[in-house]
Length: 95
Image (tube, one colour):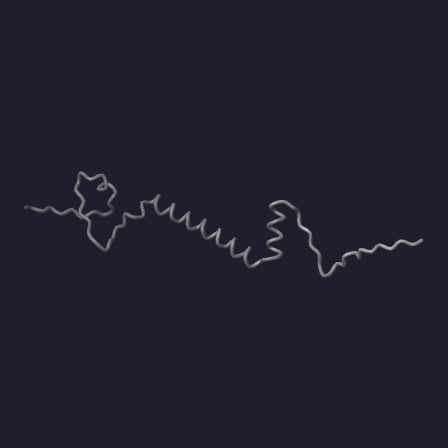
């Protein structure tokens, strides 16, 4: 008596790619399936990193203290900000 297997074997159609179950495998699978989204996500992360670095440098170098401003600022000599002013113009006011 001959017994036939009634469940057909799945046929492989196209190119089958297997990825590992790790985080790197997930990244590789994402690059394989949705490269546009993975590429734009990487560029967004790079942009966020550069933005954070730029803001950090701006505040580290006291970026709000500019030599030439649109409006004038009068600072008393006893103010702690007076020592940070770049190229001050001293004026004697006589009241």
